[in-house]
Image 1 (cartoon, chains in turn red, cyan):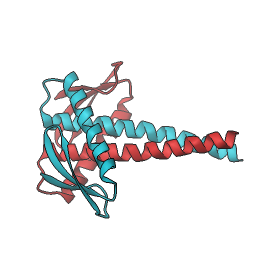
Image 2: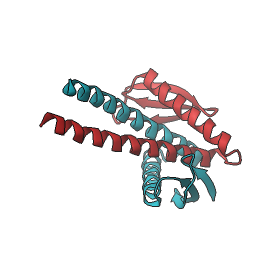
Image 3: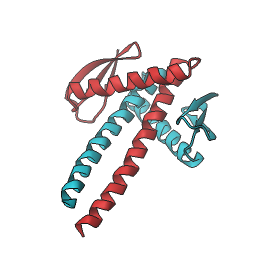
Image 4: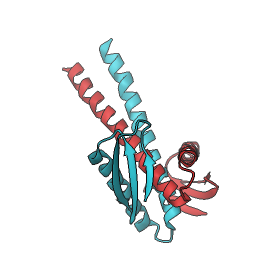
Length: 91
Length: 91
């Protein structure tokens, strides 16, 4: 089991299972939020593994991270567009 | 080198280096966007590795994915709050 700090202010310790391995995640986030994050990572890993069956689990995890960061950047773009739209509405 | 499909409609093939390994990422995204994503994943892995020096690279990658999905969900919450704020402004 690996202890991992999600945020700098440690508070909750939540044990999660991702792709057959246990991890202890520490953070101010609620255990249910942390379990939700872990379950999304687990789903993503299984989905990518299904499409790329020859990948070893290390590379699979890297590509899961690539996928998640890509989703994050798309969401960030969308947020920035919306923020400027909101600013215009307020003018 | 691993070929990995970021989006369903394949178009560009971009070779990136993440944490000392090469990956071929395929997707409709531009090569510069894909390189940006890869560089963020590489940075995140190095940052987490610095804070958790005993982690093996597979677990490190899983925790990088956990971190990225957590950031994604926070951004999604922010986006949803902004969307409802914008709807109110338009009323």
